[in-house]
Length: 144
Image 1 (cartoon, rainbow, N blue to C red):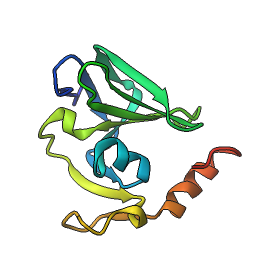
Image 2: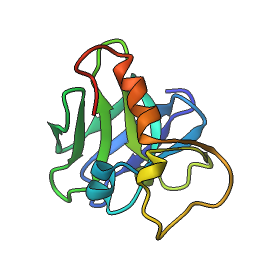
Image 3: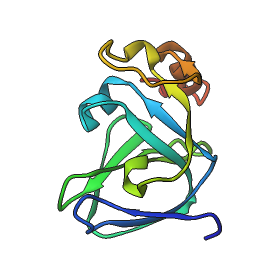
Image 4: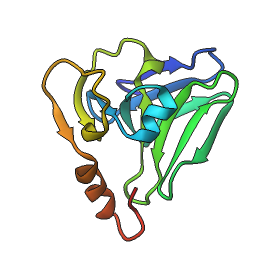
């Protein structure tokens, strides 16, 4: 894979190789991501054909249009996978890759972020309403 980054879960049982769709990181502050990771989920977006993972990966549907995956040995969050046909992508946990050199350029569900933390710098910030309007554009029934 050209421009690929490699990483692993906390215990090393799951190993990943990915080609970022964009040279940037995104943060999600939605309630589900915060419950799943304990804070914002910082991700690298990856096209389905550009992600390879090996090891004890488990996943489950977390909504009508997405699933979340984790290492079945150590529980490390691996990715959020948007499963809407024609809009599929993986939001892979950036922490799996160590230092990528990618800059944080977008925060979503910014109006759901707890007041106790903030990331330095300027970037695109989208509210719950703005993000979910995108899901609504995928078709009926595709809303959070």
